[in-house]
Image (cartoon, rainbow, N blue to C red; front, top):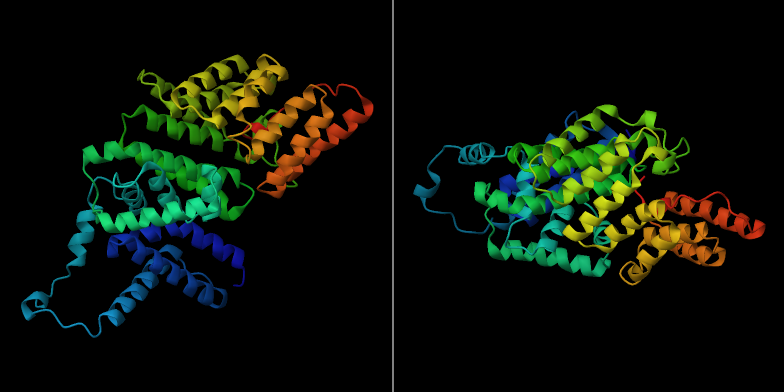
Length: 429
């Protein structure tokens, strides 16, 4: 067994559950993370010769736990023994502790780990960044890209978060009902970011599994908060987005924009479940950002053909989302809907103030170039597309923009309208 790609994928998939169990054993983030890393190193040495175990998660937990215990024994070898009465009880003290934790309100180690990382002792941005690093094992570069900040800034944010958890002596038991209710918004945001990381890397098998992990976590969260419409909206959003997975890439692995996708490939079972959740959430009459985003995805899902899409409704929903959660990215996405309803000139005017905040954002320049191309402003469109290519995070993104550059070249040469260009780079595929 020498397929290192498969081994790395298995280690990535096992990380959340293994980290959660190791944290339950050691009740210390650094110890749990070091134990998991040591287990991964041993797996990379053993699995290529012997093959992966039947249960990689159990193997990693056992090996990581033993490695950490060996380290603790070596560190305490010279420490004096405690009094006899303190060590005379032969009962297994770990078993009742584990039973107490596992019998709490949520039984999944991963979800418990999420709640610990999202403890209110930490600032909101540190909570999400720490959970993405510790639970999902995303690199600092990946997390920084999700937050639109530099790698150095994100590295500092994660380091401070871990230090603050240790200094505050955050309890590693499951919080009560009131604390869970206070923290669920941060956990929901973390799950959403995990899904987006997998969604954006759907062509990469090592990262694509994150979307399924996020859906599983969202289901667990809904089990905890069955009457919370925002969690219904979150799960609906993930299901509706993931329903398009098979149609998002062609046979060559190139991304297919939403309007060009074969809708027969969409997963109708996921769509039906997502639409049902959207309707159920909206009946609570307590709208929130996840419900609005799910409603946008539902509007796309209900259209039998791309030309049947109700872009005016999508524009209105994005306007509501802008009011609830102002963001340059939300405005950029709304601009795509505006281009369909009012034309590219109006969309271009809408994104002009975003040039500063989104100066390092691939999709901003992709959308700007597409709007300029529709207006036959070929020289400006080429500049925008060239900038987009320089900011592309994947070869697929770069290839997508090069196809637009081909249209720029042909349009500039022919000096004629090509029938309208879909401003796809700003829109989820």
